[in-house]
Amino acid sequence: MDNSIIKNIEELKNSKKRNFIESFEVGINLKDVDMVDPKNRIAEEIILPNGRGKDIKVAIIASEEMRLKAKNADFSYSLDDLNNFSDDKKAFKKIVKNIDFFVAESSTMATIGKNLGIILGPRGKMPKPVPPGQDPSAVIDNLKKSIRIRSKDKKTFHAPFGTLNMGNDELYLNINTVLKRVISRLDKGKGNISSAYIKTTMGKAVKIDLGDIE
View (cartoon, rainbow, N blue to C red):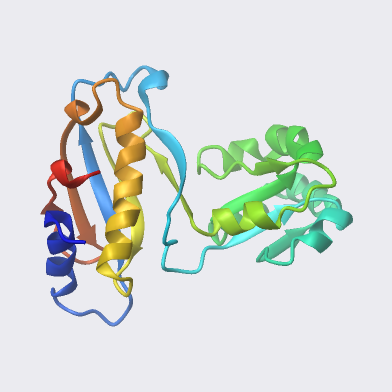
């Protein structure tokens, strides 16, 4: 696979080396979109075909039966824990900082929304509900390969799509997936994007050609 975006990725990989593995992210600038209207805002959860390239932390809040099935969850919280979180929101805020995604038994969602939504909602971390009795493992596996994009009311927003140690083709397929999803949400498709850039954590921003998005 060879196109200009892959060449842009290679260019960034050849930049100054850091003492940690940098992430790649894409910046998207919209045009002719009324971001004041909530229906025009981008709020997407996207499974990257080649994963994030880094360890993504997923927590589950559920009954003991469901938590026993969730062997791939990084953190596991009981219904008693949920009540404690509701009583001590300051402590819960500290926990949320270290967790990328939450999964919750659907029967707990009303309580979570009422008592913890004020913390989880603004951070884009409201749990993905799982019906009682269902094995949540597949949901958790998908979340470990996922990103959430939230433009809020801004015409410029960013999304991670991998890390420096991933292959060029892997990174291209990831960014292609992200941009295709965003484009599909826009009334005029690519016509609503004024420009898009990719960069590494500490690197410069490089403009990419949307014509190479398949």
